[in-house]
Image (cartoon, rainbow, N blue to C red; front, side, top):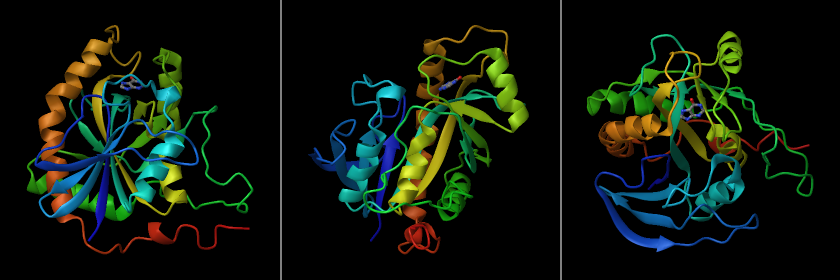
Length: 262
Ligand code: HPA
């Protein structure tokens, strides 16, 4: 049976229908994950939940131990991760509350340790043409229909360092580059997962218009409010997605390291 990992972002600290079995602190060679992992079931599927910012939301995006978080999932036997995050909407037509099933990434982060392979175990270059698992994306789209949750198919995630929000010029340039949404946590989560051959999908909730897209000043209260009001839909979507995830993987995420090592 598959074991599904869920990374909860701002505002998502529990899941619909999740029956908690136990909490587990996991040790990794990279230090501590954001919190204890919550192990349990949704229906008859094993689910492992981790709040990205810690259960009290006290770890800012630039201080998250991304390597420890993803390593911990691997250690617990997780082979698929559904990752939820709050974003600012850049693309015309995106409004707060929209849920985007991401399909591309523009990585603007610079200071984060973004690999497990620093040379000691060989030099590794994973294929990242498609940063999100195509199989999980399909399941999420289908689950949207089944759970009657409206989701947008595809979007380019611009990953920034934070914790500050962006300037209007930055957002303008991201738009020209093809960015649709902007967030602070999507990378290196996605590439680290690929390096460990875990399927990874990104579900972004538009919490606000990105800087300069609307005239309003951006506030954290606005972001948290939008996240809160979409948690119902996200939880329904997750529950249906977990029900629909096939037992065996047909994507190529599980063999990402084949032909990637020098
Ligand atoms: N920018 C970056 N990260 C975010 C935003 C934003 O506007 N909203 C929520 N996370």
